[in-house]
Length: 168
View 1 (cartoon, rainbow, N blue to C red):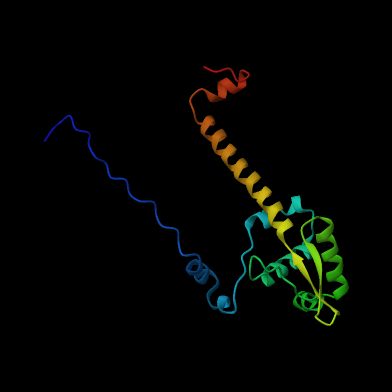
View 2 (cartoon, rainbow, N blue to C red):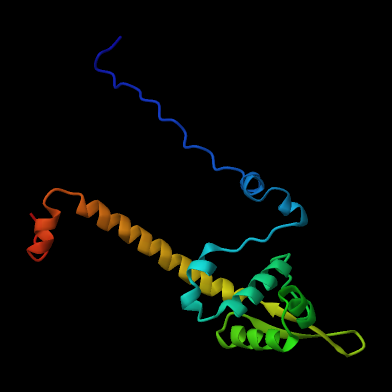
């Protein structure tokens, strides 16, 4: 055996991510049998930046639950939303108006073949765009926090920071 040859080190593969539905089943059990909806954490954690209240959030969650395909915006009736949330249709109208004013949804009128209006379609792409910006800011802040924590653990870092950031 050649003693000058570099020693090989095997690096274990990172653990596989758990199957999402399996984990959800462990948490929620049979309540998932009627389906489930994904709510991005950026929506919950970014609520202050969205400038909406709990009523608007509830309506958004319902709209997201109706959003089955990426290229087919949801189109529940105000009556259906009101029944789901146990509020009046007028309350739903107010919440939808706030969501539109905040630039989170776009309401598009839909018409039947005979010309009569039916339920509106709700475009959620503005919400997705705002959540992407929030998620990007969250990732950036997390990366900055890691850098600051790493810098704070280096020897002499505190003294350097107290001395005006002079490098040693």
